[in-house]
Every structure is written in C-alpha cells, then in structure tokens.
Length: 116
Image (cartoon, rainbow, N blue to C red; front, side):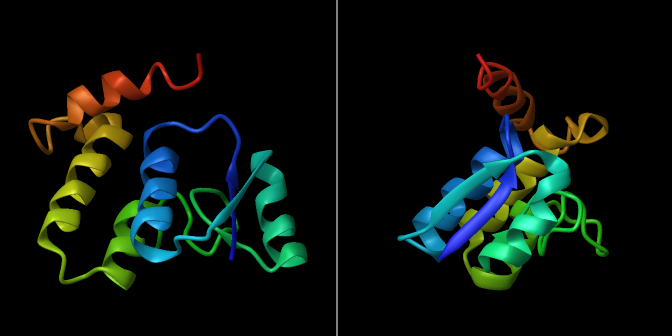
C-alpha cells in the first residue's frame, strides 16, 4: 500500500512511518511531497495520507489527535505499549505539551537532528 506525507519529516511523521511499517503495513511504500500536494497525491495514487492538510490522517484530527495517535487508536487500540508511545510522540510533537510525558522532551530533542 502507498502512504503519502509531507517532506522534511520530523518527530510525528517519523514515528508514524515507523508505526505503519512495523505494525500496520509491513510492505508500505512512502511518498514524500510538498504539504500542498499531499491531498492530490493521495487521491491520484490511491495512497493514504498522514500528517498533512487534506490527508486521511491529518496532523490534528477532529478528536484532537496527532496522526500517530489516530493510527494507534484505529489499528492497535489494545496495545498498551503503543498507546503509551503515542502519548510520548504527542508530547514531543506539540511544543505546548512537551511535559506530557518525561520522555517527550528527549524525543523532541533527538528529532531536531532529523533534517540534517
């Protein structure tokens, strides 16, 4: 299956791609495009978009969840470890929630090096 998200991945997109490949779709193929292209590529390629405007799993959904949280809730709801990791990712992804878990600040710091 194809998945599409914004280029220049950071913490949530990295974590979400890992979650997809490891627990949801082991054969996942990822497309990384400009933010404004995600919805169109999703439609044209039959891909599932995440962490972008117009994506199936937007950066923040109607329930206030980041895409990682939404996918855990949909595909791995009963996995306590992934639910805990979802809180860590959420805290790392949203600066105003950095104190959500003790691990969030460390994950955010690590993710700052991703674009290098």
